[in-house]
Amino acid sequence: MPAIFTHGIVAIDKLKEAVKRFHKAGAKGLSRNQLARDVDLSLRGVDRILAQLRKDGAVIDADTPPGQRSQVYRMTRAPRWDRRISGDTRLALRLAGLALSASGTRQWDGILEVLNGIADEKMTDADRAVFQRMEHVVRIQGDVEDPIEGEKVLEPLLRALEARSLVTLDYRAAGFESTAKLQVVPFTLVHDLFAGSAFLVAWNPAKSQVTHLRLNRIDAVKFDGRGLLGPEALRLLEQSAHYQVGGWADDLAPFEVVVQVRGRYWVQALKDAPPPLPEYWFEPDGETLKVHFKANHHAGVLCWVLQFGADAVVLSPPELRDELAAKTAEMAALYHP
Image 1 (cartoon, helix red, strand yellow):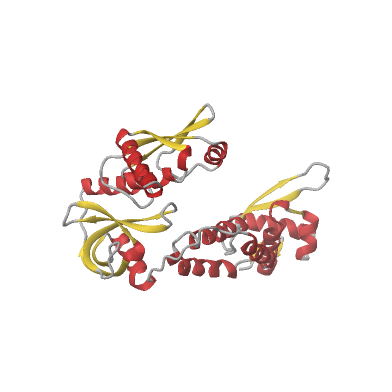
Image 2 (cartoon, helix red, strand yellow):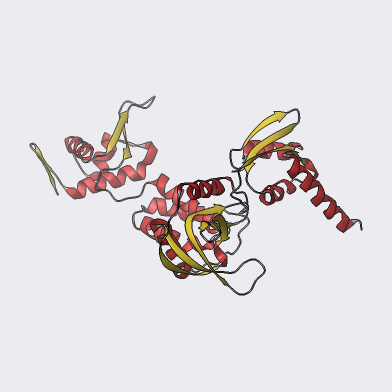
């Protein structure tokens, strides 16, 4: 710039240094004297800096902490021209990268690395030390490989999702070594933590129904033109994506599941960390917990309930309860023939 005032000039290097100091101070903030010393300014120069930063879109609050005589200034929003990523944003990005890359969807790694590279360029040395340390002390359990060809699959799928294109997929169904051609209109990607993978929710125009496809079974994507989705197809796609559990879904109407869970450890765990099930809620029932949620396919619900062993019982719907009773009888027969 620099920005010109009637009583002097604020040099751009001083503005940048002040912003850097505010980023480093964070929630502790800076006093007027600290800012003057750190940026090598007079107190009047500090006032000019603060005025210019506010004019440039920065939000700088001031208060007098208990037991202190001088005001402390905190920058809660940087000026428009500052490209530095805030500590909170950087923290969120890093944690998201750790979680996504270790929860069965390694196909995100390349994209996350690009974002991390952008963030690294704008990080202070203090921030960099914090996040390097975090990579050693934050550990994500349950890491599984889910290889997906980014250039051949993920990138064209993302473009097809944006353009609502009709595509032909080379898809390997479960249990098959070879691929088959499948023509669909992609609707959305679902990252399912229960199944440890990512799925494509798509419309199959040949069968007029919703289909869920595991991403790592797609070998290639070919564009076939514009895809058309009517109101009913869109409704079924949205319903299927919202109520799927563990990668299992149907385009049938969702049903409510009620499960009674016992055991103080299970009960407390469900209270502390409610699972991300569709429309989940719970009610205490003595020393047990009644868990309510919705789904549109039995298989995903059965997998979730079985993790509790004998400490969970399905109360409704009756057909799901009967199916679970039959499954557990089959399991028991394996151990007591």
